[in-house]
Length: 527
Image (cartoon, rainbow, N blue to C red):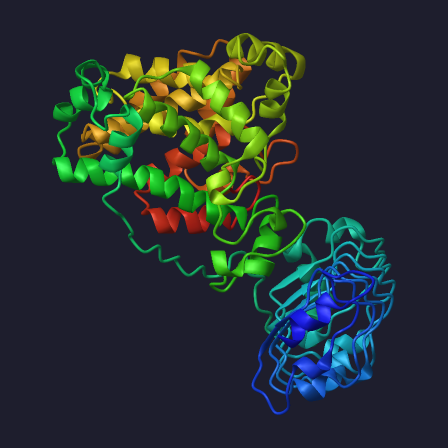
């Protein structure tokens, strides 16, 4: 109540704090977490640490803070301090150097010219981010280099010591640089970590009996499907073609939809980060929707929300339900344009978020609703883009007529070409859809490699360019996620990367939680 009263009465900005009203923290208290990010703070009250004696996590990111009070030294239980995206020009000394339990320190995107050597006193420090400052040099202590610090980021500075070229290679290179300096101290050096242990994310199985009600409501006003609609419904014809028990078949179809949304939501946590940044923010089991970093990119979504990829899958599902499983790219195009303008109003949207360049260019063309394939072809010829935006939405098409590979292939290309005309995009969509269809037939229970080969064979026929075929063969023959090169410069959204990742997960027989956890911790176009 005090917080709401204070912010409501602020004359300069009724929705942002210009200072921290310490009277909202009664004394004594046991408050451990304080998040004051995305405000207009310039200073921090000197008495604040005395009002929060048990504080362990403090987020002051995205403010206008220029300096910190010396009283920060009394935050004796502080473990996490986020000061990113402020205007800090210097650090208070010796205050910050005396925080005995500080493990995570984010000073990125400030105006720091000097990182004081006294910060080497932070013996518990494990993760340090100095990126996007104006540093010409920085130093960490022998203890930090050899025993405590696991991740050190210093991208986009002006360093000569260590050289900026070393800093731009990432955490391992920086730590190796300092360890080389200390090698003569006759101390057994701990190897630089390449991956933190990632605790698997537990996704509770939640399923309601809603599909029948949705279908009945959508098919016609009377609530019952017509005879013609039942005759045209692909699932009603194909269900008997699976070697799986009907309950298992239904479970896998539901798993496809839920898995797409869950993977998308978790992937948003690391989207556009590199591997070091993923480890900095989410290592040691911190990967999870509740821990999503609230930066300028992720602020457009609430934690737990999915992105445009799942939105487009839902649009396609709506179309399929309305037309009893018949694929209609014209109907999909109309829904896509409506979503772009309004999002899903029933979910509180006012506009569609996260639209990629390829989709955006198609939607902006005045002929899109009349001839989506022609428009997409023009966009492709003008840009040469082979983005991955169609792969995620078309996965559901592996369910329709899964006993008929030719039909699956045709449906995948029709919906893909509504926005992504490049043959590589079409091949990617076909590969994923045929892979899903083959698994729904029960073939994966016998031989995984035959499932992969069947899907790749169906997709490879769409490619004629030798370079495209070589690329396709490279990604689909990868044996681990690192070989996918998720953060490859200029190619993080390349359409062959998701199909390559699917092949890795299937060959390794990875369960959903393990595959998603490992893959999104590599960053890139992680959603």
